[in-house]
Image (cartoon, rainbow, N blue to C red; front, side):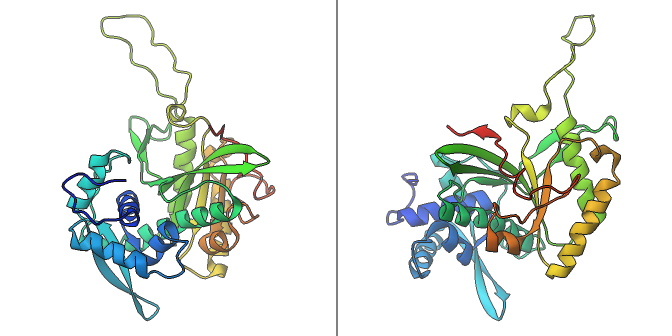
Length: 313
């Protein structure tokens, strides 16, 4: 990704790749950038030099946070850096801008946990010979819908990320798309169950077309769900839990399944959702049997995960 002519010379390809990742994911630690951008380097010194060149050029800024007795650096793009990435036109433009206050604010841990989740997919894709890179998930894209349980309201579903993954097996390439929700046990289990309800309502939502001005006949009935304008097949929903002990997360999974089973809207939904922990995802990868189906009877944990969404080009 070359920078526009106003960018100073001397920024190498690693610095440019890091800028793209920072633009896409907003706040990323040095450790995470190393996993995503320079995994072929055993040490982080070269990456750190590239990041400091971005900072010295005014394209990036940094804050520190204390973790396990050490200071970890968290990076984001300045307005100048964001404009430079946008000028190239390779990434979907995002209006959000990070600031020192936001970088140190209450959403810091959640933002980093979402990056950790995407990084787990990237690392296991490399190991398995699949395709998933640091730009193959996009955080917080709005999906508008209506719910029969709340008539007259336009609602907005915002997944923590939408992730694309190309699974390759016996020369068969399959594009898998996932909605990703990361839960750090900060919200109530009832609130988490409400998110499942929202995904089911979005799956069911079919917009009704407005009659043309000046016409009198009945409106034509729409037959295509709203999601079909964005996805060839409805993405699987992956819930990734972290921020507590394995025992507490296991209880949370059981409670979530119980609440989901008591929601009438989820009884007949074709929505397919699975839940796991971030540690399991990191340690075993997405295609080991680590996902517990949230809805319906238990099934092989990876069976629904590998179901084709669309053939890759």
